[in-house]
Image (tube, rainbow, N blue to C red; front, top):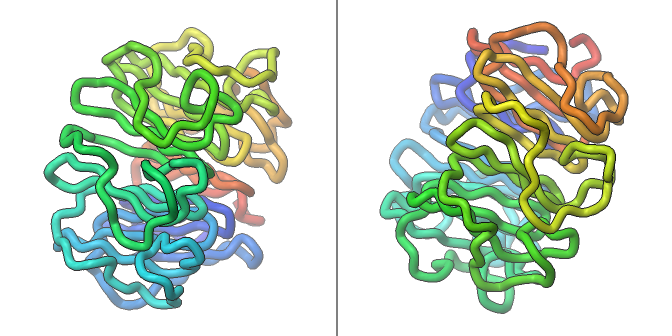
Length: 314
């Protein structure tokens, strides 16, 4: 694979998107040899999100931009675009996450906003939204993640909240929710990631927890039934980062090792075969980032080099 100094990496349904330390976006398709190519000449990007057919990114000036499919208004308005187009005029965006057909973003004031598909209430209330609309009134959000049709966020008080599709229990309990509902009672969550129909989160004590769909064991354990309440994934307490794909999960430990569980089709967890227990991937101990997509996974190391299960020459 072509190597760049990686600031952020995204593996998704159709390929790999990377943001380098100079603010340049790079792209590679999974349907061709995995060779990264720059996306335009802009050196001004600070954070990116990509899922399925649309990309949303934040520039260093705090503006929000989107490109790709816009069937449900997920990049604002009604028209799709093949070039990055600004989404409204605000310039105080802090973080963005996307599902296949919806977008959720945090402002620097801690408020949460969404647009796009709202079939299951994943951006709050009723009906699709083609303009960014605030999701309720709280102003203490610090992180957000999107699944296929659900959204989960963490507040500054450490509580975990979700809304949207709940067919597999991915936001806790039963029944879809179009209002933000607390997941469990703990107030020590520090990181959350969403797979297609499941959710995995890390507590302040370094333990790893999950709920939702578990068909391939992506939440760990021999019982591959759905989990409708947060369940600890094994006993380790040194997890610092986690990413979820379609049916697989990869997490990083404090020591820099990477561990995978769930579906291993196309070597998504390193060619280990399907796993229902977290299993170490390779022998490197300097991983700093991981991103799981539908068809593969990407890891970057402490030197900014990127390695992918999608690369035929990995």
